[in-house]
Image 1 (cartoon, rainbow, N blue to C red):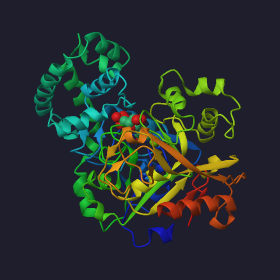
Image 2 (image 1 turned 180 degrees about the vertical axis):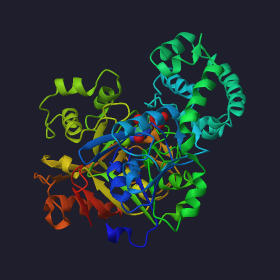
Image 3 (image 1 turned 90 degrees about the horizontal axis):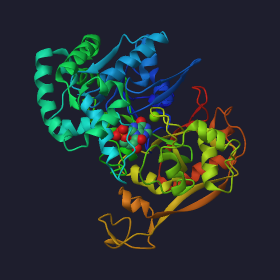
Image 4 (image 1 turned 180 degrees about the horizontal axis):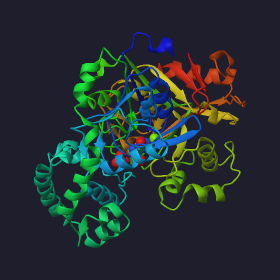
Length: 500
Ligand code: IMP
Ligand code: MG
């Protein structure tokens, strides 16, 4: 650990997949080194699960570094974050109940404020999507960032000024009311009926500016003491104090670089993260990217070439009828080695505890996809953390997707490195993924198959003690994608970690 952080002042930890790779554990580990821990993207759509001592807690909006508040660490919710005041206060309550302090927590005055209209619009978009559903968490993340870009948004600072808030919310609602008229009022009522927060602000299908102002002023009264110019704080601290930038979601969910349009609405790469706290990417001294040890997961819709069980798994996880309890009952005793990939996938989900931390949804699971990893490696550092390696310990064999075979219509593409010629055609081999959902859906993965290591590795504390078969797979991934593994995680606990 000391070797890794040597000469570093600013370290970023982000995910190189579709999120949920175990950032929480590493933010917690690096928090010891850090003076400041800052989040810069996403909002309460995220979910960070952390095992701290005997406690396991999930945070959505507040940085995972908060568990180190009592050690004098400063936690920051940066200006790039979509800020839901209600979620924030709920998490403060969770911390209070667990007797965890939050004395050094700051919220950017210019963070984007989530309003009741945003959650509704998020859910409406999904309801009328007709096959184009994103599988959003429904927290209003897309609409709040859209409003920001469309110059219709409010910020956290507006919580502190009744007059200005009122003026802005009236203007905001006037525009939104016109848009909402395009939707079936019955549908709006149905959505509101399931959502207490929404219901309290909607009167006869119309948003009540007065009620929203009252509620948000009360939020402001409670949140005011956390509000600060955090961009300035970070700019002053950079180069002097140790700063840990805590990512959310993952590169493949980035609105700018991910598997568009099945992405979230902020740029969750290290570059976007730096910008979201008032810094720029070149100020990051060490950018660590997390991938799961030889598998991947995705919550929500969108292409997933290596998904175990393919379409069947997608439908099962996203169809809205399955949940953990039902799955556990129907597929008790499922084995990761089952011949049926769908069932093997369920077993892997059970072994890895792969359920959405925010929505409880089943995470779709699949093998590690090197074309996607090669793609994200193009705009990222080589430094990688591999997590959850222990989850695959019982597998007879481990498959790694080496490349794809394309089965779609001719596709013009500027990336010459991918294919010599200007078009990708039926039967072509693709070594680097193209971040276009329709192209990825037409890609068939070609696997390299390795024998599993078949032994418990949670007790391994150094690289040499790891099974030979595991090292062979790692070596293969390193050669193929030019990554440099820096940390291996062999279990959820802090001590189940190997620094290389
Ligand atoms: P939204 O960010 O709620 O709009 O959701 C857009 C997509 O990103 C959906 O597929 C979500 O499941 C996914 N997503 C958003 N946040 C996270 C996260 O923290 N981890 C994993 N997936 C996420
Ligand atoms: Mg998560």
